[in-house]
Image 1 (tube, rainbow, N blue to C red):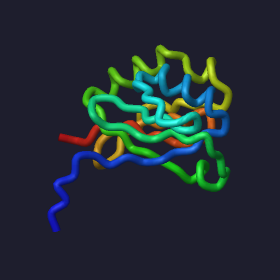
Image 2 (image 1 turned 30 degrees about the vertical axis):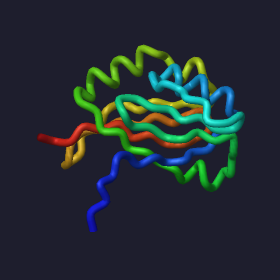
Image 3 (image 1 turned 60 degrees about the horizontal axis):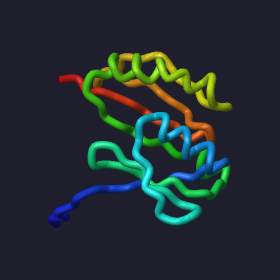
Length: 121
């Protein structure tokens, strides 16, 4: 089967929609308001939908992986934003090395887990 896909977009929830909107703008995503309770956040042709909806079991079990070039540079820039000091519940982990490459983790204000990684070449 050939999909000829152009993108794939996840839907994620927000415990406090305005706070999460600001967090993702601070993280460097561009926000496109879809409706009063949904925004599309994008960067470099990829993105996700943020909803003003919160179901703890759903959000606590949601993870997104974003592959980046230059993981150390990316981590340093993100660390420099001091998001854990600006937003309640936001946590940033150090980079760790795995057999497939390197990654670090970022929890958003609602508890959703981001994996930022770079695959071994």
